[in-house]
Length: 150
Figure 1 (cartoon, rainbow, N blue to C red):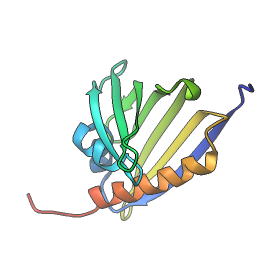
Figure 2 (figure 1 turned 90 degrees about the horizontal axis):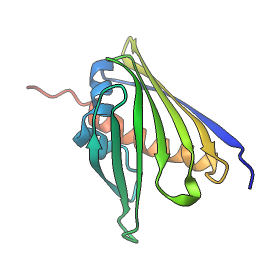
Figure 3 (figure 1 turned 45 degrees about the horizontal axis):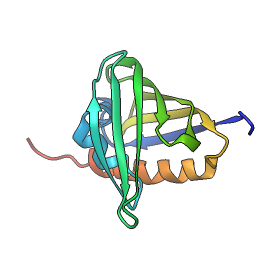
């Protein structure tokens, strides 16, 4: 089996402040709400938000009830600007570390979001990653863009 890896780059502009978007990545209830792709539910089991801290969550397919878990370690956290983490999938056929970098920049209408996933295993089709991110980021927009009073 080849050890080739792939990289995915995502760019999105959101009508929400970098602070709000940053919190959506690091608050367990928010993360579980927007990360699972369509057809899946998500549950955060651990989220120790600090450099060296770990997180773990599971996804359950609502149709088949099959579950898989992912986790990772936070490598860098710059409040409201960037997150770097090393992710891993607990499925044996998807082993390996995936480096995820998230950067946020203020934009005239809210935030610019850049996400890079490096080291995706060859057996994960890049097209599926892009589709999954598109679904998740639409859900993120629904979560962070509404402006509601306190």
